[in-house]
Length: 232
Image (cartoon, rainbow, N blue to C red; front, side, top):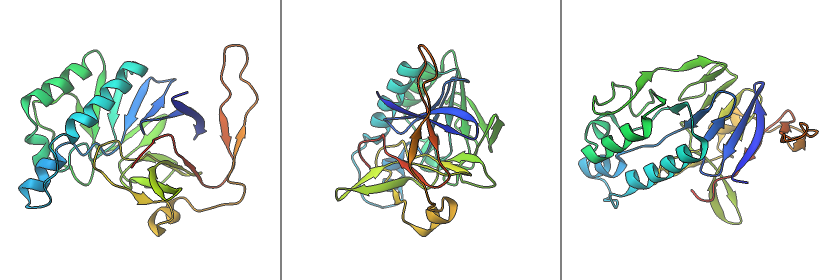
């Protein structure tokens, strides 16, 4: 199985192995912190020179998720671009590829702290500060329950940092989807304040949903780090 089914705020969701979140009932594919154009932004600001392939790697993974889930809506949950200038500087072939990926579906760019401005007119889709439609979707966790990104949560297992979904009663925080994005360990006080560690923080399997259905894990009250993604 390439995803982990679970419930949050009364909705059945899928934490996918790539770090994407899928909402089957609505056919929404949600990804956080793509940070497209990161190597360009770092070079422009005189930082470390990164191989200029992170955008293509991120888009390869996103395109595979679109092929696997056939979403009606794709939501970039903020920081889709490493900054507004990086979004405007994306090569034409990257913009063309994004437009092709958006054909036949709605595409929404939620504004993040890295990219608060208008998107480049060569790109598909609409922008929104946040979305309220069955779930509250925003870049940075606020008044919950909400689904957000921003913090790039990760967990240390066997001496290695792994990207993870952080799930609590009031907040579902997605891992960064983009390449070269790094992460903040779930033990950091900023994340602990949003999703406190609680008693009974284990997954409990629900009863089977019936013939042809799938059992969804129920989250007992507390804190859960779901690690479907293989690396940080």
